[in-house]
Image 1: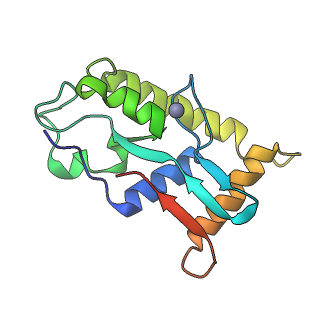
Image 2 (image 1 turned 120 degrees about the vertical axis):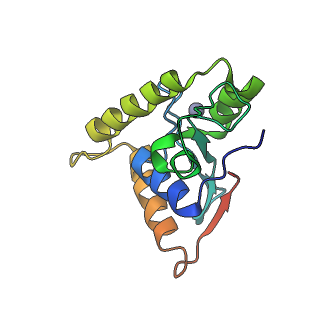
Length: 149
Ligand SMILES: [Zn+2]
């Protein structure tokens, strides 16, 4: 059994859609942290986790082909801690239906909480600033470490 390797574009789009916030409703931690006092350096601690896992695992769906397994619809954005927890024992304690529910719930949460025009909490301003830096990584002097797969 090998982990599903999502493309960089899938990982990036997934993180954007999740607002860089872990999709586990009991966690919802921000996956970006400033490094020290340097506002241009950001630690990135998010991962794209397969909802339906690879062959041989408890979350495997034989009805899915390889392209479907690597698609964004089969990925959920989680922090490193939740990614590790949900992948323990090949993910047997976190079935695909549960992760799909988290993803759907998170989508609604993002819509309801991250597009507010009113005064924003500091964390949300950080998400917006970091997302902009990551999008412009080629031209901006930003150091982003990706620890994900
Ligand atoms: Zn988490």
